[in-house]
Amino acid sequence: MTPNNTTIRRRKNKLHKERKSQLLNGSKSNPKDASSNNAAQEARDITSSLRRTKTMMQQELDRMSNVTETIDRDGQMLQETKDEHIVMKGGIKGAKGSFARLKLKDKEDDIIFWSSVVFFYIAVFYVLWTRIRIPFLMW
Image 1 (cartoon, rainbow, N blue to C red):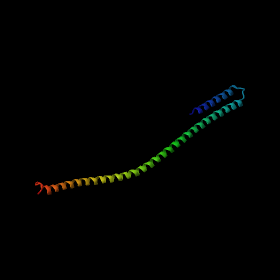
Image 2: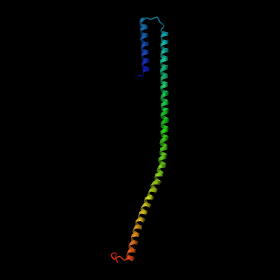
Image 3: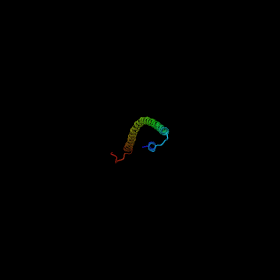
Image 4: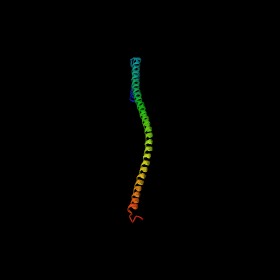
């Protein structure tokens, strides 16, 4: 139960008790004036309660508007991140292909280098065998 409803209920109970005591005591006051005053007070209470409700609803609408804007910005940021990711994915694919070609070239260079080393030693061996005639080299 909200404080507004409690206040209204208390006033209604108080009004009811006053009317009851007036009827039992035989009061000469005009009940029409009392009821119009009470009705006016009740109308003011209801009006203030409605104003507070309106203010609270306006605050909630503002808050929801801010939440909606935040969600839209987050969605836009996620979309931009996704687009960047797609662009990077293509770049990574290209880099992966280039890296594979570089590895292949590296292996090719290793083969050429070691083949050159072997050829050099074969040439040295041949020169030593034919020109110097070293006896232990299979004469």
